Amino acid sequence: MTETAYYILLALHEPRHGYGIVKHVEEISNSRIRLGSGTVYGTLTKMQKDGIITVFADEERRTVYEVSPVGKALIAAEIERLAELYQNALKYGGG
Image (cartoon, rainbow, N blue to C red; front, side, top):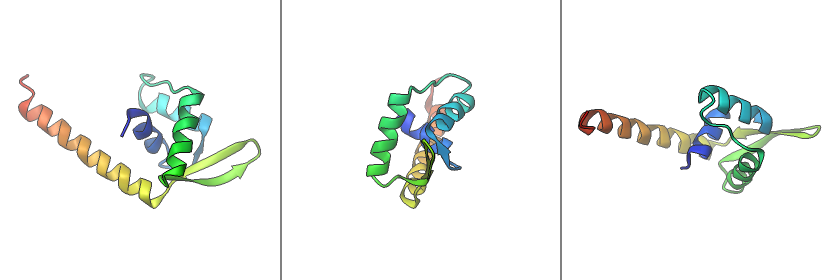
């Protein structure tokens, strides 16, 4: 999973529209990640096609997205994978 997709899924722990995702990702990454609208909407489109997210609401000029059950399983597996990477880095990182 790309870092962009990972952070978008984290941002969608509650339903959000594209701009809300951009701002939330910036906030939770301490401004390290600043997603462009093309990146966000391209990733959202792919995730929607793949069944990872769904449209929660289609408001005036804003589509609100949420994580699907498939997406919830995917993010849980990714978090587990990252935790393993972190533990191995601590154990074998040579630092």
